[in-house]
Length: 530
Image 1: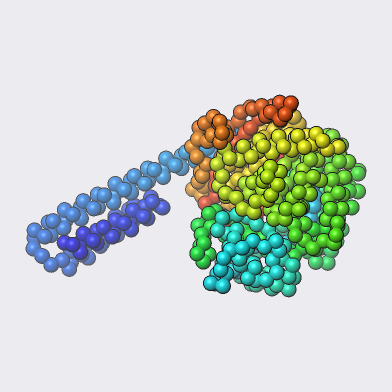
Image 2 (image 1 turned 180 degrees about the vertical axis):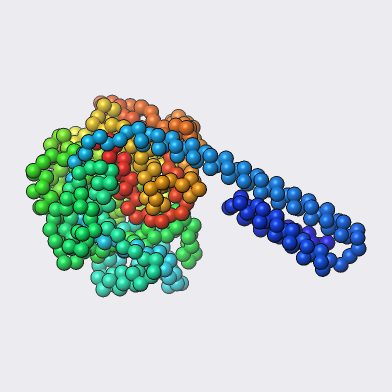
């Protein structure tokens, strides 16, 4: 009987685990259990009394399995209905506001070929990796492994310059040898350009590229910058949530990127873009791709001169042209300080993820950079960072000649979208923009145009606080999933009325791609607001 009981317990533990992941296995589990019982009875040694006891025990455990199956099936049904209701709420908001005209959008700077590979295929963990470590630039394979471990264990996205071209080319060739590897058009500016074009905008992209890569760009996008003989390549090593690499496990799906760019750090398309901008006033100018300058071996003052050119380009735009600066992964404090002085004050709008806002916040508030941050921060934490940045940037801009007043911040995280806009400013449809950004997050990562709730989950809590210090608690309403409210930000003598909108993300549970997510999300949010 002891062996019998162990058999039953083992069977139930297997079946319950399977039922948790798929309630459809209920009937299979019961049928399999019945087969097991027949086999067991065929070899059972004992009298009729033992048989009856065994039958009673078997019947009991069968009933338990069926009840557990029903419970998990019902729980799964409730969750699916909840997610479907939330999805319909987001889609109603998105479809409520459609583009009736074709906004003109100009985007700089750069383009590349993205080579995607599964990180665990390309990077094989060995004990030589040792302690994870950050490097400003990557020169050796061991430095690559240590740097990858540093960011992988936090589930943090990273983008680093590899000075060793020979090693870089070898890694790209090795990555391309895997059947699952693939290549696409990449670069922040190019990815954003394609999203804006898909959403119905007239787009001008500043980029230098080869003829073959140019042929892959949608014809509706006007590319200015000229030709090159070799395209810049970004090697994107992706990993999934919970993936194990040596002793480390990833907190979320993300990517680690290395590059050996020649054109993008030099903003080689700048002059041609400047000439194009002199002929018209776009509705929106997007500045992006400046992280390619991070730890790049410029000659003395070359980078600062390039950023001064970007500053002048922003300053020369008409007041009717809104300017958005898209942040990225920065590891060099000097570059981030230069951006805070030469770029941020001349933007109306900023876009960033949870790592980038922590980095910008620490740079402006404490004077140092943050290489990694919590990959799933609380809503209250991010909202407080946004408030502080909003006030700091607005205050600093008052003492900078020809600076613009910041009127919008969009932070896109894995679990939610958060957008601040100044009331009665040029930015409209903030609630719908948050909804569209949320839906775009799932669509991009799952590589689909339709959201499948069976491949989605909610990470955001059922309620959230609006601030760590003295916040109001707001419950998630799945019928009206985007929460919006008004606030007054006090910055010295100025009272700034803002609207805050927070939208939950239906997080893709079967990630197909993570790179380019922020660029697509940010563009989708902007398109309904210009």
